[in-house]
Length: 122
Length: 113
Image (cartoon, rainbow over all chains, first blue to last red; front, side, top):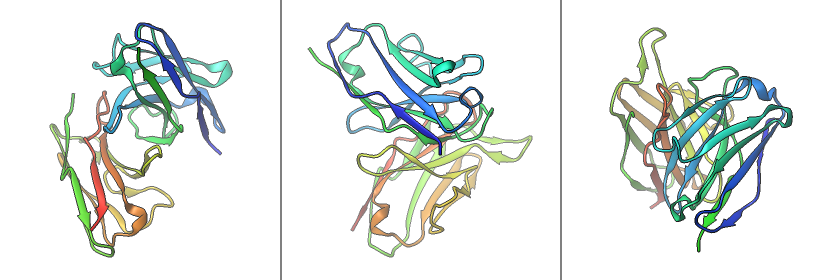
């Protein structure tokens, strides 16, 4: 069974750094694109970017380029989303999700993680 | 970026009645070389992550009830629920995966009348 298990909720102050994780199991991690989606409180879904774990090839939304870093550790079958300096406007639920089909960059999301709530407040 | 616009923003339908949600893309998501529309529909129930219902604009995901159907091509798409059930109360999103960023529509909230 494919599973994506995300790290727990975080409460941070503006200016702090953060790295959240998404551990994958039940499939060959290196061969499926995996991505991140933001959902601000009471709002819709925003596509942030995707990464191919096999070679770390990454695609960012222009809205998030330079604001976050998407990375993987293939040895741990884990994807990461990282901020260097959080803002209050980063408060949201962040979902990881895997492309439905192996090796297909142009694809929809199949399995999703449970979401990680990030709260940024002074 | 391709802008995805859904209508309506919210919808109240009686149990057993038909619900129709529209999605319009700012440019075509039909790839001419394979004649496939790069469009998916998701359902997000309260407190849950999204779940894919439809991909390639009209292919139903395994396990999704057949009351859900997708149609359309090019820039105009529709998700139809033929006979609304209580379990269908959710927010529905379309998404294009034709070109990055793979943008979502703003969502349509479906409620029971």
